Image (tube, rainbow over all chains, first blue to last red; front, side, top):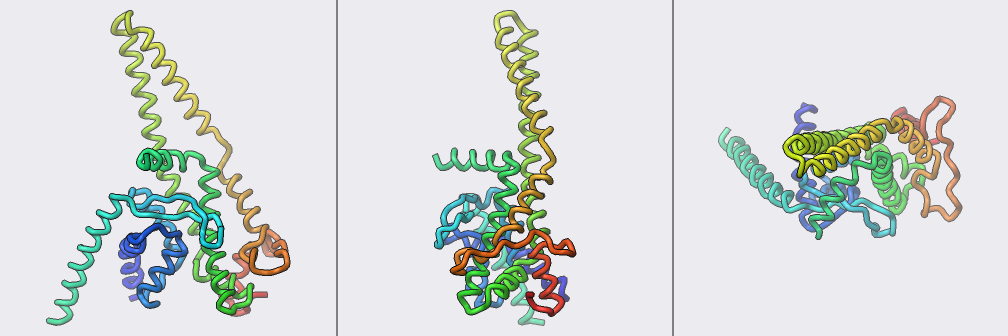
Length: 110
Length: 184
């Protein structure tokens, strides 16, 4: 049971990160906060696990990073969506919507 | 322009391995510090704030190692392309040299470039073990103020790199918390 819960989070983390970045560049901590706040504290990921996911997204060319100054004037690494990342977000969102609709149908009929 | 900058950044960032390791450390540390700041702002004591920030973050060393691995994979891919490029130029140079006398000079030039290219790659591969650089950075990281700078009016006390059990302050915080003993 715990395993399936973990897989669900891992499978959707990239989508959540891409969606968080859709409004503009954010650093990792802001991404974690955005996910938690947007989900009204339902989704609480292990915050450190964001970074391997971000590095993978960067490797795939879906996000790009640049160092800048944070709101408290600290040096922070900001991530932003690339053009390919926006396309991927659209694809992932569409896939997720289809999947959740399908699951909802099963739950309603079963 | 943005695209060129982006390409240069993507190519250049992983090549500087020590800088890449430092960047990973800085980025993860920034996250923990930000969480600790928010915790303190919410009323926690500095020690509890750090412990909570580390707990929420997860296994710092493991996460850093995973990030480094991803960087290395990326670097390996780029190095494969660079090495392939050197062999391609060498091949072109040899073909030109053998084909006729008129372009033979160009062939010599390409062979020279390819050999220099290969030499640079070889020198890069001979660089000291990255673990030593990482260990030095860890020492600096754990030996310095972990997350309280800017919060306390007094200068932060230096934190010893390792305690008598050989644990870093972060490991100590985590194990103290997980054993229910609180932060000492």
